[in-house]
Image (tube, rainbow, N blue to C red; front, top):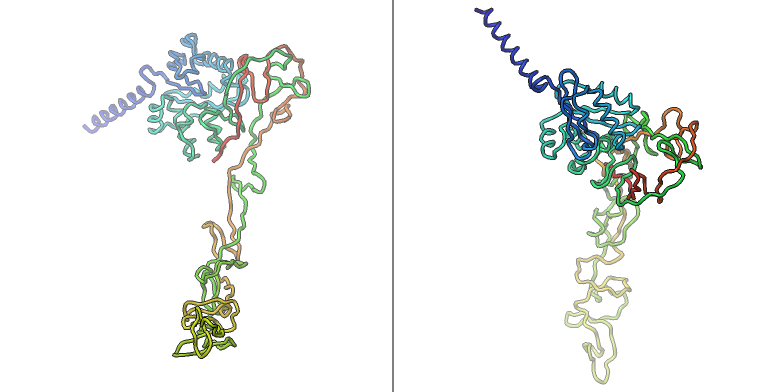
Length: 453
């Protein structure tokens, strides 16, 4: 009985495995392969590695896909696809990034073989497909593989808006993922610049260097695009530490605590002062009133000013009585006086200042000194305090230098082969610095610097 149960369980497990295989390889063991460059293509491949069906997934792919790519081996169909990609300038000799999505057998090695035979360098990426990627693919009408690459790119560069990248090429998306550089949605990232086509003009016929060659000092040299070196570089003042570019920043610390040798610590505003002082404690002041004096009545000051007291009131500023009497004054004891009963002045003061309360301090009698700073702090929470200085590290992403393959020399940001020189031929060329020839049409370009995180 136990043996029978074991056989039943094993049979059920086998059924589950077969069902799983059934769905992974489609109904008849087929593999579904999607390829994204900017043309997006879906290929159905049978278990004998022949193409059953191929279909374009976007407008760019319409010029790539043709019916003669079906009912032939995948390798032969892939060769035709690569030829069409080259013919329509979707890929070139320098390194190109391709994203694939696979349900079934992995054909990436065979694809690499075809590209190598066509002298095209490729970097094939096969991202993990998450549920979020599947939802994004449905939302924007793109492949799940491209959606997965977009999610990876945005997760590493949080300031990016995923909607701005849906229509961009895989090369550009991957370049942004690796470097953090990006362009506005209507510009394309091409190396170290953002490019937008703003018009077209007819080219002129002239003696030009043929395709694959570029003019330098009147001669046509074989040209190839620069490649990224393996060595990570840092901008000036930064040092490479554990794959990051780091520099040390030293700033003055901020006073945090003060002390006064005498008096009370106040802000200069509290002390009624407006003029700043030099030094770390320029916004603080020590106010010492221990020897300060208060204002008094002119009769109390008794500093030589003429005054008189009558009826308990203080009078000052004596003047003779005029024929008209004492206009504006008060006659006391045969003289005219000003009423000083509500006037407060300070002894020895010659500035004419009047005070409103006996609780005020006489100017010049209060001692103001700068406090001593007893404790400092750093404005940057990650900084290390040392004395009156704050030290912290600033990091940024490094960059990889563009270099040339063996046999080529870097010349004005181009890789030229000085051993391969040919004569000019009759052909089309464009006038103007910001223009380029594309399929017998001169594109006028708006060029600007890329943004970065």
